Image 1 (cartoon, rainbow over the protein chains, first blue to last red):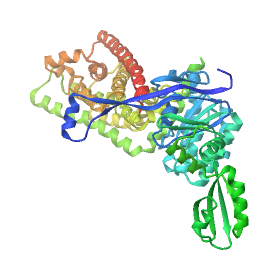
Image 2 (spheres, rainbow over the protein chains, first blue to last red):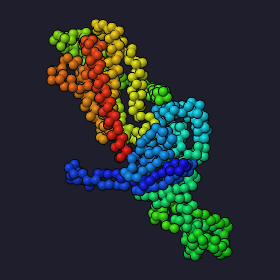
Image 3 (cartoon, one colour):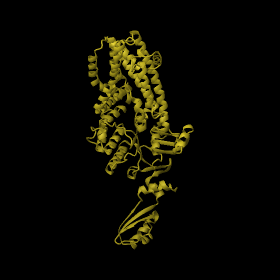
Image 4 (tube, chains in turn red, blue):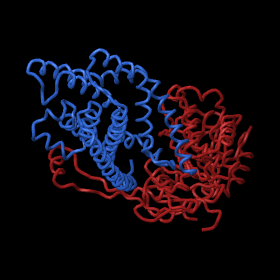
Length: 331
Length: 269
């Protein structure tokens, strides 16, 4: 393994055996005597590597196997087959030197002690991770500033808002300055401002400490703002691993052309220029194959009373949705 | 050395956290503590009236009965352990996962909570115990060496009960409701370990059962050390037996912990 590789997943596979039975009393009684099981593969043959300092977005619909993968990489779950190396360690062994250098933040779970101020949890973590006093003060001051947390550490955690709590969770999870961050939906349920602040914080942390980050999120804004590279997982399998722009090129090789017109245009007429997404009053949105976009634009400008025109990539949400529904076309 | 220093520092922080957590709920902790005194006081009154009506029971006169149950109210406090109830909850809510991600054995949290609870409650228990002794005034003598042996016996009894609870806590890896199994064991302990009455009062068959279980060393033994029922030479034998049981339960807990972690790693929370 080269020195710069942080996380390496090798054919990670996780299968669960779940008891199955039909509904109803008879089936329920029968299952007492003869249990039937079905094996469900949550993650199938997943392989990838992440280098130092990389931020990778891990995308997939609910139940795709994202959290299971993160749990295997952090040592909480043992793979059924395959394996992983994180900073050269086998996560399953949960060695102290490994645990000191990683963190896993789950948006819906918390580690802060509910009834007392967050500072008590920070101090507890300081002791557990053996962070020197001076370094602890310095890091805490830095995080407090980045996350704008001034004045919140002396309130019981239960009295904090969801956003404040999530920010405190991040502080608790990062005070020992881990080199590997597994972030599972860190912005779940937060308002836009709060999401932005957390994104900036993750970016800042990544740059300052050259940490590698594997991030799952359902908010495409998170992914677009933070991740140069995305891994898409669906039904437990990796469907795509590459840059966001490559994903857009491969799955949505078209541009969205929007024009504002000084006079309305009929849908039939608009359809002559490309696939109509939306036409209303003086607004028209079209989809055109990438290589035809310049020609379509020229025609629009010459044939319609155009006031304003923009050419964009399709929204990333649409791209991802398309991937989940149709798969990634092999180029 | 640095391992020890780290452990001490971690415990200090954990104790402070758990201590302040308990102080957040002073009233309910106080009521819970008062409730724990109710049992010994009721048993004291019941056995006193029986003794008054029928004469001494198994050699226990009025003062012996009073001393026994007053001592019981103290011992009960120091042996309390409840992680058997908590552990399943930690698994179900995923809190265990958060703790497993730290380079620190999650069981230390239980030890710290346990110690913090016992320390906080002494604030009001010491005056209450003093008041109870002054009210009932049992005639008993206590030499400094007996007091020391009592402290030792209570310490070991607390450890033993903690490990007993810990073993049941580990069963939560396999069954969702290991706490009801623990309740069952506590009921048995109450019956044969010196809870409902001194072991001397038990019919021969129950006393026989008691001899093969650790319950007597958790409750009856430390009480009898302070009340002077256990002769000096038997005290050391009893302490050795407590230690033996503790070692056995500790080994069992560690085996279950390792196996449980494997299972947790296989099926998750």
